[in-house]
Length: 193
Image (cartoon, rainbow, N blue to C red; front, side):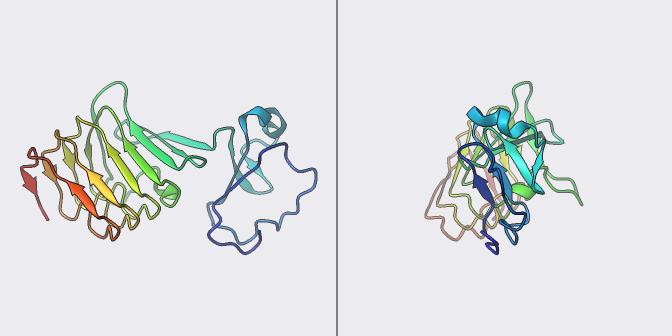
C-alpha cells in the first residue's frame, strides 16, 4: 500500500499481523489511521494509541470530542458518519477568528453529517470543504446556518433545511457543485446570498 496518497484508513478484521514492515503504508494520506474490530480489542490494546507510527482508532473507528461551544462531536471512520449534538443545553457550533473547529483534521472522512438535537446554529465555515460529504441531516430546532457553512462540499447532492431555520448566511452552500436539490422552508426570512 506504499505511495497511495488518498488512502486514509486501513481496517483490520482480526489480530495485528505478527510481522508488518514500517513502509507498508508509506506515502499514505498524512492523517492515515488503522481501525481494528471490537472483538479483537484486547489483541490491539497493548499498542496504545499508535501502531507502527500510525494513529490507532480502536474498536469502532471513532474519533470524538467536544467543541468550544459545548457540542459533542464524533467522526466514524467505518461508517463515514459525522455527528454533532448536545444533550444538556442549546448551543451553537462556530469558529473563532484565527481558530478552526476541533474536527478540522477529519474533513475528508465523513460522507454524512448529522447535526442533531440541541444545536441551534451552525457558524461561519464550520463544515467548509468537507469534500467527501454527500448528505447533510439537519434536525428541527436549528435556527441559523452561517456564512460559508457548507461551502466547498463538492459531493453534497441535496439539502433539506428544517422548518425551524430562519437565517441562511452568505454562501452557506456555495461551491457545492453536485447539489441538485435544495428545500428551503417558508421559515427562512433572511437569505444573504
